[in-house]
Amino acid sequence: MCKMTAWLNKKFSKMNEWDIFLVNLAVIAGILFIITIWIAAMNWVQSVNPWFFLIAWIIFGIRPFYITFLKKDKK
Image (tube, rainbow, N blue to C red; front, side, top):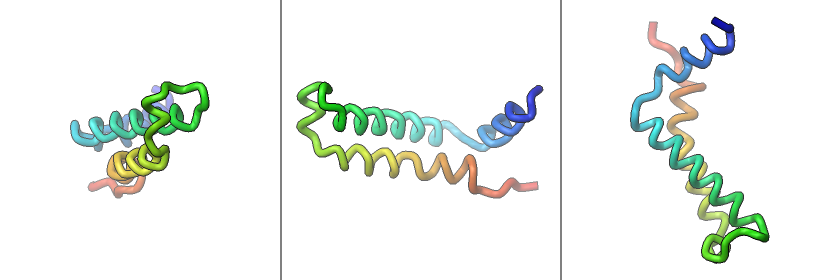
């Protein structure tokens, strides 16, 4: 197994279903943020303030980022 694959498996093994759900919400909010700043995007998405999606993306991504990259391993 590649060193990077082993490292990613170790990091992502700490995630539970809640973290995966939050990652999905963060991706959705990030995509909506990109769509709202893109001029040719859909009208209903453009009517929403893009900062709302950026804030949602950050909020949904905080816990999974912390669990995956910042939390110390228990040995």
